[in-house]
Each structure stands twice: as structure tokens, then as C-alpha cells.
Image (cartoon, rainbow, N blue to C red; front, side, top):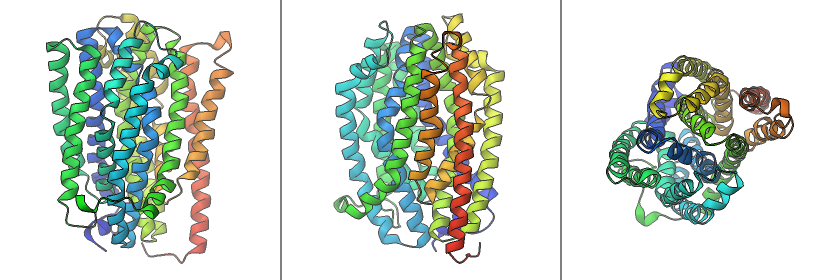
Length: 455
């Protein structure tokens, strides 16, 4: 067992999980800062309409992109399981399959995003006073999909191998560049939403170049050799088996968010602006909790590969406890200081600011429920059971929210933002409980069919 495998598969867990999760949190925060910098600069220097234009694109971009991001999760799980099992040839082939898959997937996303942006935004009922700017932002953003996919696949591989510092360093460099370019393009060249989109693409290019450089300099089975880049059908199938359900889950999750965004759009551009600012602030809480999902996935993956099943139970319990603390702490911090935080984004509309305050009260405060749901999803994926959380999420989140919108929310008496927002914590709770039952049943079955391994 190599050093990375031993790190995750041996010794006390709490300290290792925290030390692993913190850089992942910081990486996620920096990645979110790309969008935050877009919103803050465009909101302060171009006005709330431009802020609404950028915010209106988030849910549809996630819907299109998440399917391919799921494949990067599949690559990471295969790498983690291969390291835990000591199957380094499989790790090597997974790495050299993942990179060309990222390039092909990114190229496909560029074609879809550039050609269909206006159509998608019209389907969502985007307000006429912002749709042209939203289309411009999306088209430029999707021109950077190849580098975005390469970074995400590469970062997933590095984290699965235990390297959590490199993605943080690379995104730090890209984040600084993104902020500088935002100021240059928006304030200096008056490019508005096109400027922030272009800044994002250029900064993502830098992070992709750095991630490829890091992979090419490794001294283990994860080392990338450009001449060896070739899609291995068995390993691509493995990535698809784990990653496609994860991608479908994320995409269907996004469909429900698209429907909610469409419902929000029906209230007008002021509500869209306040909602966009609040959602972006909440995103910092989400990425902090999502770091525990990634931690659960990779720790579970390596220990599953090593057949340390009792240790997996401890990993899940620790991650659930940690994500609850993070979610409750950060979520309620956002509620307590909501007006000051929203004031960073919104400077020209008191009504938009109050809409953001309302959303935080209903979503940020109970956000830990989403965190514990994410941890259960990560643990199941780490064990290679990606289809199971997909099915549960489709029922508990996607179907529930769609039904909620077309039943409860459609009643004139309940056609309010409060009723719309309350569907979030209800769906998180339902999904977590079902996933927990599924996990307990699965572990019971696995432990009965295998001799227990010493932790």
C-alpha cells in the first residue's frame, strides 16, 4: 500500500478528514469566487439589470454542464478504488482515458451552449429586459468548456490520489487573474456581462494548463504522458457506469432548479436580482459542505477498494457530523449578516436586497440538510453505487419539486416566494432519510457477503 493509500486507509480518521476537507473547501470557495467576482463587479459598476442577466444563466449552465462533470466524478472514484486496491495499471489507464474524454465532452458542450443559449433562456421565461445580455454571457462562457472540463477531470484525479493542495494553488492563481480581468474589462473597457464572461474563460484556461502540468510531473500511476493519451473502452465504461448516474442526478437536480428559476423569473427582474445575489452567497456555504461530500467519496472509495468496510461506517459518521457543524454555522451566519452581505452585490435596489434577505431565511438557515444529503450521496458513490443515489435524488428532490411547483405553488393563495423556497429544505430532508436507509441496507448486505477486514 503506497503513502497516499495508507493516508486514507490507516490511522485515526477525524483529523485526516478535516485536514483533507479544508483545502477542498478553499478550492471550492475560490472556484465560486469566479462567479462572485462576476456578480459583484457587474452589479456595482453596471447595475442590477446586468446582475440579473448573469444570475439568470446559472441554473441552465449547471443543467447542461453537470452531465459531463459527473464523468469526472466517475474518473475520481475509479482512481481512488484503484489506489486502495493497489491496482495501479487501472489507475494509469483511467487517467489517460479521462483527459481525452474531457476534451471531447468540452467540445460538445461548446457547440450546444453557443448554438442554443437563446432558446434555453426563452424556455425559462427570462425577462425581455435582460435576455440579450444573458445570451452574450452564456455564449462566451461556453466557449471555455474544453478548459473547464479538463480542469474538473484533472482536479478529480488529483484529489482521489490525495493531492488536495495543487487544485487550491491553481485556482488561487486563476482567481487572482479573474478579478484583475473583471476590473479591466468591465470598469476599463465597459464590456459589462461580456467582459466578466471573457475574464472567466481566460482564468479557467490558466487553471487547466496548470492542472495538466501537475499531472505530467507526478511520479506515480497518476502521471500523465501525452503520447499515451488514448481512450480505453473498459475504463471509459467504468467512468460512465459511476459518472453517468452522478451526472444525470446533477442534471435532473438542475432541472428542478431551472423550473424554480423560471418561477422566480415570473416575478420580474428585481426579484431575479435579489435571488441571484442571495444564491451566490449561499453558494459559499454549499461548496464548504460539498467538500465533505468529496471527502466522503474519496475516503470511502479507497477504503472500499481495500475492503475496510467497518472503517467506511466511521468515515460516514464523521463526515455527517462535520457537515452539520459547517452547514449550521455558515448558514446561520449568512442569515445574521444577510443585509450586509447582500449589500456587497446590490447597491441600487432596496427591494431586490429584501428579496435576498427573504430567500436566505428559508434556504441558508436549514442548509445543513442539503449537506447531510450530499455526504450520503458521496459515500454511496465511493462504493461504486452511483445509480442508487441518482434514483433517490430523482424521486426525493427532482420529482418532489416539480410536483410542488405544479400543485402547491400553482394555487393562487400559495403563489409566493416563501412557498417556493420552502420546497428546498423539505426535499433535502426526504432525500437524506431515504439515502440513509439505502446505505444501511447496502452495508449490511456487503458485510454479510465478505469476511470483515481489520480497520
